[in-house]
Image (cartoon, rainbow, N blue to C red):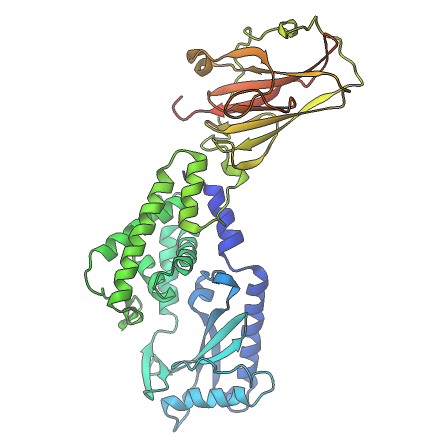
Length: 459
């Protein structure tokens, strides 16, 4: 099952980086920008600071176990006469080191092409100096003391075009979902490599087939698996905006084989969950992909029931009168005594509680419903339940019902609590259940009908 609403809530609430951290990113970027623009050594040559990577692409995810995450900044500046490539990085490092704010957090990670500000247990900012020479952009490799060609905006523009082709936010959300899975299943693929491979799977006309997020994920993970399975050795994965830059440098043969096998396993699990037509079983299978934090949305417990589906109450002449209740001589309703029905939706086996429901709910088949009678009647009294099915489906299956019974357990047998009755959603149509309080041979209170609208996919 697709569980479209569950996917949306999972991406928004669990996968995507939370808003307070996003706000701290914005603040951190602005503070760094202000520092560089106002710095005595770098201020005159300052051009601009641009977020790169997942921040710019909108694919930043929550880190595993609340670890820190990285923010990439491209720092464009004018060329300094007489400076070697390593000078840009070493001088930038020194300027941060001079300050009380940054002296204890700069460059703890020893990276080659950036200066890092390490905000421990939160995030770190990688600042990559970049210069323009003859309309080409270069970053600096400190250990080799060389300039390396780069593309300042090309990759981001390419990714944005892929997103437009895919339509809506399907590509960005799929990238976030795959990064989430990668981090938890230890898939050895750097973000830029994974994002590039996923973007390369977008082809002209995909907006017509990406009809929802689960479908988009199923299609993309299938294409990624097909791509990887086609290679026995490391494939070439180039920067789409700069063919000379190869992202497979982040892989080796063993990591490639491990990635290839794990992606195929993820694909099988996604396909299995997507095609499963049982709500509870599908939820269990999606959790094999994403973990137990993937939860069922209230909006998905109705399965495939469309809000435009019309349910009409069928004939209910088969409903038995109150006098069919054993020992009941009729009604003697007491206005001071009431009874109502509280209802809850459960998985098909009654083990997983989904949500509370109101009368007129629309749900799919093969779900459990737990009804609880709430009354202010004083003991002793008996509680009886009447289920009235209507419609052609129940009639065809000879299950119109309409008789009275005491509360039942999910798997049959009488409930030890007379106020509780379990039922199963089975037949397409509009049906109801009603609760009756019997005392001294008369019905002294009745709940009135609690309606359920059920859609079986095969009827």
